[in-house]
Amino acid sequence: MGHGIAQVAAMAGYDTVITDANRPAVDGALAKIAKNLEGGVARGKVTSDVATAALSRLRSANTLEEAVQPAELVIEAIIEDITIKQQLFETLDRFTDTQCILATNTSSLSIKDIAAATTRPDRVVGMHFFNPVHIMKLVEVVSHEKCSDDTVQTVRNVATRMGKEPITVKDIPGFASSRLGVVLGLEAMRMVEQGVASAADIDKALELGYGHPMGPLKVTDLVGLDVRLAIAEYLHKTLGSSHYAPPDLLRRMVSDGHLGKKSGKGFYEWEQPTS
Image 1 (cartoon, helix red, strand yellow):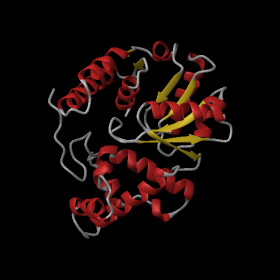
Image 2 (cartoon, rainbow, N blue to C red):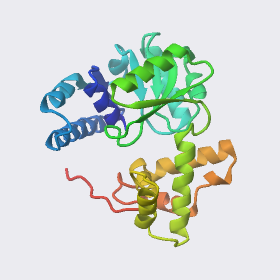
Image 3 (cartoon, rainbow, N blue to C red):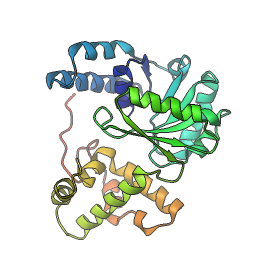
């Protein structure tokens, strides 16, 4: 999701630097941003001046230190693994100014535990975006017991400037959105597993019957089945509720490499971009 976050930051007028441990991922991210902006201009959603200005504010960095050294806000969007996130935040703590806010885009992991890897827990906060970032309006701002009110207000202001609607939630497993969304998604998977209806018809039931803009299985394909599995396992472990027990179907699909849009196949078939 990093490229989407970088795009809305640049469109909001922020000088934005994007980096990744994998250099081709950076090049791919910049290409996706350019394509999104081009599509926005073609559809009349973005003016050419706004698109050009956003691209001018974007640059990439070859190393993490180069990317974050001048930053006032760093937004992390890496794998949903608490240990890896803690290692990254320990490094960010050393590479950035002490007043820099460190935000994590995690959808379920403990912000307090991530903040504990730093010497500035009051400046560490959750900033949970939704996919696709340049379209979805919600940002979940997650505060923990050591996070300062100033930090929460600052990232709320940033989210608003990005054109998002921020909500503030407590640091509990799954926050608000994932606790609700994962239950819905997992139950939809169980319905597919039981042959209740096709994935498309289950999604259509929520879209047309309840006004959801996108069904839970299509959302799962966009998020990534591997990501959904990791979140479900974490919530099942921490909350202890059977609601979050991953269905066998989800485990099989992940094992078979059917991860959703990024792999070309999940609950739907997805066209892969040509190089």
